[in-house]
Image (tube, rainbow, N blue to C red; front, side, top):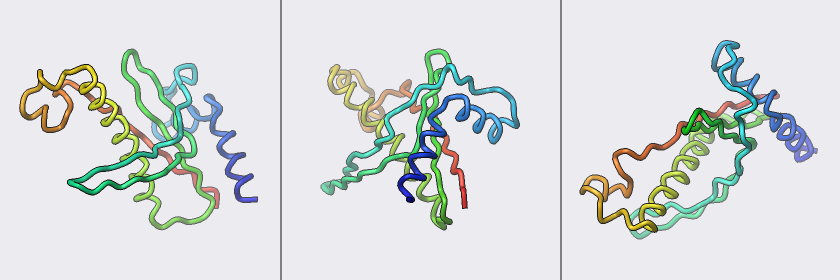
Length: 148
């Protein structure tokens, strides 16, 4: 039954109008800042690997609903996590999802620079991080909707 409830909630929030209304109502005091026409559903899979020194940690995580909103040539990521039971570490879990989204984008930028042979044009500080000073990570906002 829990799985069915989760699917129903995911399907409910997949609707761009509902999604935009929730964010506009909670983050923007009802102002119509997010336009449903500019929302695009994203892959909920944020799985990947994190390597630190010589240790590699693999993780497998899925967000409930995540959308991308284009604002000109830039975009923001907006996520919803459905929660029917109290989860006392939910802020940590939510930050983890956001971290994984940022990590995924960061790794994509680094791979692109490596593939396009941009590394040789980087200053030492840019080379250290693998991205140019002008590269930007896009903002991620997550709302947790508690149904308990």
